[in-house]
Image 1 (cartoon, rainbow, N blue to C red):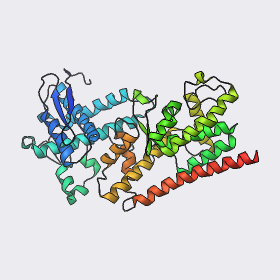
Image 2 (cartoon, rainbow, N blue to C red):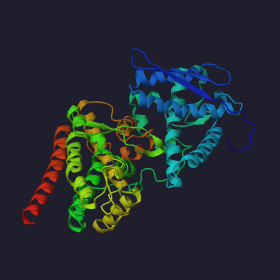
Image 3 (cartoon, rainbow, N blue to C red):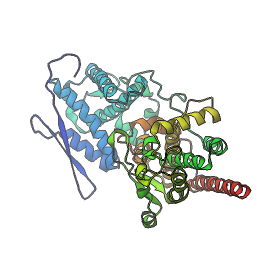
Image 4 (spheres, rainbow, N blue to C red):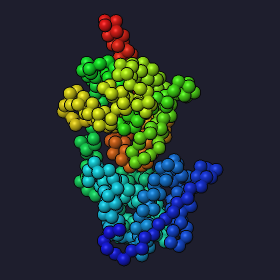
Length: 429
């Protein structure tokens, strides 16, 4: 806790219960066991009126929960919320997020995370004032305890005055100048050309075809599943057993042994790619072990091995392989394996937008980010919002079927080109 006030920590506990419509929440204070009706009612509003998914709703409530805990821990009530108290909460959240986040993230990234939470809180406050007349004067453009042009009623009814309001006027206590909306802010995202060039680079420069095929397969898994480097490198042969693949439909659900923060999230591997992995295990990987005369027990059943020792490939070695390759094929950018995950995110965002536009479904940044974050094994969709907000309008009016066919055909063509190249090399050798 910050600012040295006399504080007693207050916790709010959320208990999720199944209902006919899917779910609801029971929220209560840990110190008094009183129900927190604003959270309970807001949950029902998000589920019934906004038609948001349960995972999205859970994230929304966690943001509001943090604000209420902050207020009550300082001996105040919601009626005492002001711009000043909201600003203090913002600063406290910034320190909390910075202390718990991965140290490689920038301070600007921490601030963007806090801003995303604050925008959710402004929405909650506008909703609360609309449904609870005792909260009149809570939030308004002028003359209220919390200053904001945002109106959940105007947004729902698509009133013209909503669209004239700037983001800064809607959410004035968000932290300015942290790179939101800047087209240069996000980390580099690999392109289709990068993927093709990396494949060609590995084929041309690797000391053996076995190493080239290993690196290309690792690249394709990252691009088509969104797994992080450590997760891809932790994959085991048993997870791609023939009998498991034969039982799968369009995708094989894989839970990598190594995941960030110890998560146990599943990732979807397209069956076509899963069969390639199986073929690699039975051929190139087996040949690598035979050439190194390595015993099977030293591999720990891992798919990707060191060509020198036959032991599991080290994460640092994988990073160096892709870092060195990117410096050659695209020296103008700073890129490594993780940019394949960014490519996966953008590809999925595009597909999601196209599908929703064609079907007339919700194309809000929040909804799309929540959906894609599940595919990427993320606990929260907040970090995806900047990517979605820049791409959400790109495919309005496009047709999903054409875009999806083009993407799939491109990948199939790429696989075929590589197989043809390998056949040519085998014929000439």
